[in-house]
Length: 179
Picture: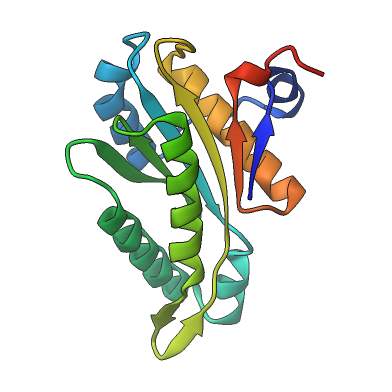
């Protein structure tokens, strides 16, 4: 199930954070050249692994690091080379930028990501069942967004997914101004 978010909610929920991780800097560099062209179709996925801290607490930070590596590998297998970019943003968060999906396609891809992560991982003979909160923001010729705005909307949608206890929350520009 996919839920929607309006711009009004974005202003309420979003607290600006500095993007300081190395992966985030590289991701922004790779995406920036094409993303700041208004009207170009892009989907941004902000993925947070739910309750990740428990794996570090139960086993070790080393165990958690191996788990993050496996999550990254699985996400990398799901993307289309040359059309998508995936990076670990910080801590237990990953981001994907895609230039190949419509808004409906982005929602379906987010659901696919959530399902792939639910299939679980095996680290040192320990089965790890995961869920994720995924925020999706979309930009196209009808609803152009600058890169920083797109990432902010995706992060806000992810926070809304977390708060609503759903896997995917989609920011839909058409709902701006609708109460």
